[in-house]
Length: 212
Length: 212
DNA sequence: TAGATTGTTAATCGATTAACAATC
DNA sequence: TAGATTGTTAATCGATTAACAATC
Image 1 (cartoon, rainbow over the protein chains, first blue to last red):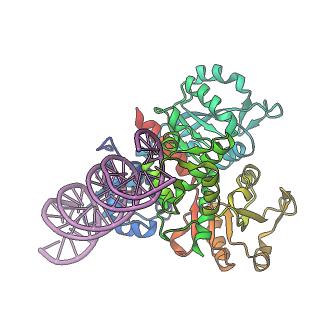
Image 2: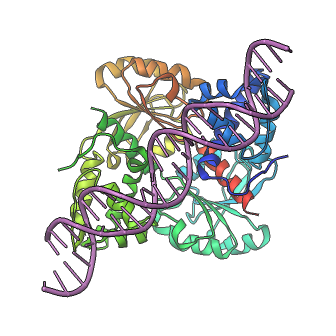
Image 3: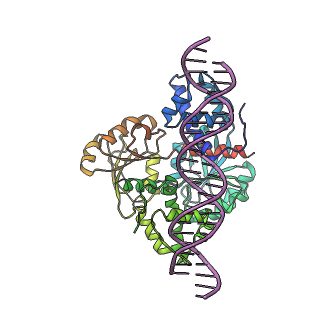
């Protein structure tokens, strides 16, 4: 059984998908058991940290043996909540939104994309991966019916504040935000994952120059 | 003048682009001076942290006054190295690569994209934003000539290990990695910014489920 | 000058690592 | 059983916050 403590730090949570990814690969390669020491080596972490992290959720290992890959993989699958798909919508079906849908398997990440909205005339009515793009005018009506909990924002910065407000009113409680706009502050009880690609590239470019 | 200490923590460095973004907005809105207290409030940080962070690079404020927005913006511009463009290439011009190029202003992030490589027949010879897509067969020759320092990886996981090896051999020292593959470990002196979009979405989806 | 706000040192908090008894 | 490796407590390390003297 999972869950030992309710207050697990973000540092731990952010490592979970990576554990999941490595376990998946081990499983695929037919590895049946792994010790925290060996997993640590492969992942560039310490064995201590892995044991500490996993013990936030339960006791999945066995003294003298290590962890059963298949079992640990399944535990992570449940911990991450991959068995229960969150209904979601996407706002903005430009280059980036389009690419995300084609590039990512949402269902494999615990998310079910059910609607796409954009205001560009030439996009409305076309579809991506079987989902028809609608005008944002249809947003409220759609949310009433489908109750999406998560919104993926692939919209320009300027459009963000107003749209976030509308979405919060519609009952959306989580945002995967690609717009260059920081949501978190104004809506303290909303869950936000900001993906600032520009910040990420600048950080890298800065590190490279710092080296010299 | 910038630079006080050479060993600045990653936590600080990762906040720099965000400071830069907020300063940019303040400047655009005609704000001329700002105190650490007010900036902290707007950014959801503490005033202490902002002063500590900035003091890693120099003394940019004035007691009793605060920070001159325009001056601090320029300092950050230099600290981040935005004045000196790093030559870069992109590997993989599928949906995601395509979207990144159209969606991001590389030059505004201190990076100059000079080449795009892909092996799909139907892409070779076409161009994105004025850059012609080449076969990866031309990679070594191109690197010899242009000496790109940074590579953007928009390739499938399976293709990554071999391609990274080739690129490192070609003298590439920094990777902006979108493939679901972790580079860092094997090449300790290479700078890597992994953007694991899948991990990011899983984290969000997990946080949402945890709430209940 | 008095008020404001910095730069910087000290205190606190949290996360990572080390150590080791428990046990498979 | 002996060896290995966990779960967990204690020690260390680093990052954030608080406090305050310096000074514009």
